[in-house]
Image (cartoon, rainbow, N blue to C red; front, top):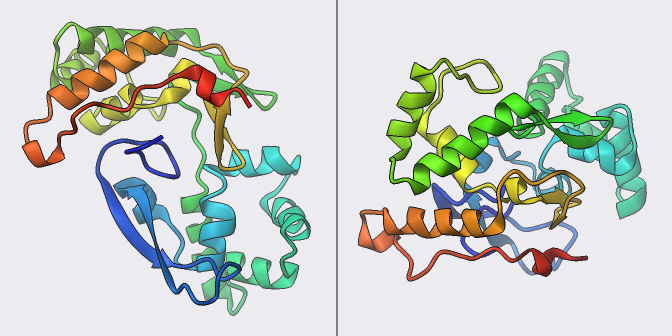
Length: 242
C-alpha cells in the first residue's frame, strides 16, 4: 500500500527513516530506508534485530502471541527464534536487557511500549478474533459519514466530545485519532498477520467505495501543494485474496 507506514498502515505524518540494516541480511548494507509514521518511529526499538524480526513483523503484542499460539511474550519469542533460526538466549537478552536490574526494568518498559496492544476502535478481541462492538461501530460510521458530508476533522472532534463520546481509553477525541480511523483499512475488512496485509475474518464497518472516497477527499483537503498527491491510493479487496 503505497504512501502508508510500513508497520501500521497510517497515512499521516510519514517520513523516510534511515535505520540500521537487518543484521541477518546482506552484510554489505549498513543502513536501510523505511517509511514510518511518527508514532511508529517514536516507538521503534533501537536494536536492529528486534526492529526487523519483531517490530516490523508484528503490529502488537497480541499479534505476536496469536501468531505463535503463545501465552506470554517470552514463549512467543522462543518460538520465533526456532522459526527464524535465531539464538534464543541472545534475542531474550536483547529484548529484556538482562545486564542489571535497572537495565531489565528499562528494557521491559521499552518492549512494552513498542509492542503495546489496543483493539481498533469499533472492535473488541474475542477469543483471538475481532468482534464488532456495536456502540463504537456506530461512532466509526458517523465519523466517515460526517467527513463525506464536508465536516473537517476538528469539527468532528467537537461533535463527538460535545455528545459525550469517548475513545477506547476513555479520553476526549483528538484530531489525530479521527485521522487514524479515517485512514485505517481494518474497517474495510483487512488485517495484518505476520507483517502481511490480507483479508480478515472480521465484519467490515465501512464499504470499500466509502473508504476510497474518504481517501480522495483527504488528499483534496491537503493545503500544502508539496504534500498533495495526484491521486490517493485506492483500496481493492481482491488484491488481498491470499
